[in-house]
Length: 119
Image (cartoon, rainbow, N blue to C red; front, side, top):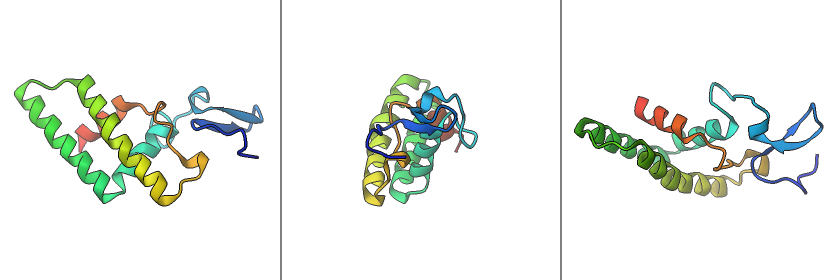
């Protein structure tokens, strides 16, 4: 398969024998909603700097929950904005191939937030 026509967020569907958006495959990945959500979590969980940032978010969110001023939408926005920067840094640092990159528009930030709060 050639990556000439590849765009982030696509995978090669062997049944259709063509590139399709990951979101259209309807497949979960290792217990996560999709590949991008799994890969996003994997990257931020396995890098010390990103993991510490995620822990700081968790601690902040849990304090807000205790005070009663936790806003789930604002929390998802913060995760998307700041942890996405970490993912981009890691992809660049490790030279991720196109099919290994995270399509940030396809990440389920609700699932990421739930995982952060479970820690």
